[in-house]
Length: 211
Image 1 (tube, helix red, strand yellow):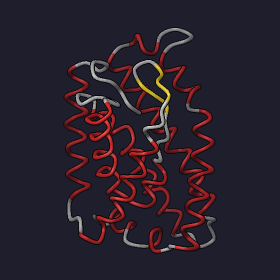
Image 2: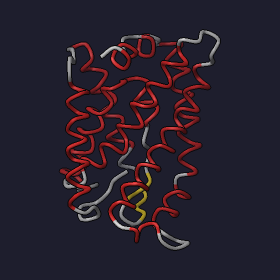
Image 3: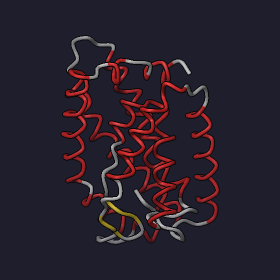
Image 4: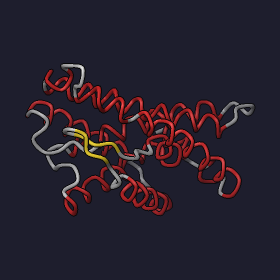
């Protein structure tokens, strides 16, 4: 999600910026050198893929990777997302600086929720993790849309009024992305479990559950 400058009112900007700052502090806390390469890789992945976007009103539709980021990075997802969105705003005017906090929350919060869910099911040895990851990939999109709708509604009821309101158009526009990200997330997790299982079975669960 790339909300542009001027879309949100001042109270919403202030609250989302403060909340994003707190989330980043939580994400950066106790970070180790061993985690940096993986964070850098996912930062680059999110940066490139989320540049592929279709503008819709004050926002846009683009790959979010909430589920995948959460599964691989856990609570460190917020770091990768914030850096990517900041660089996109500065280098390509993609998104805004005043809405950077809101944009970070829109992707980072669902990613962290997805990480909780994935590692809950990971404890169940009979669970098909690729299928779980696929469902989580779709669930991350749903959470992001709900957050976006809430933020736009708190800013102005204009965004939610009418048959062809911005929120309704965004909901319809994300249906294809919902299916694509579900399939993509499940496929990538399946491959990683076969070739690089440490990316899935490493310390991420500790970051999420014991930090």
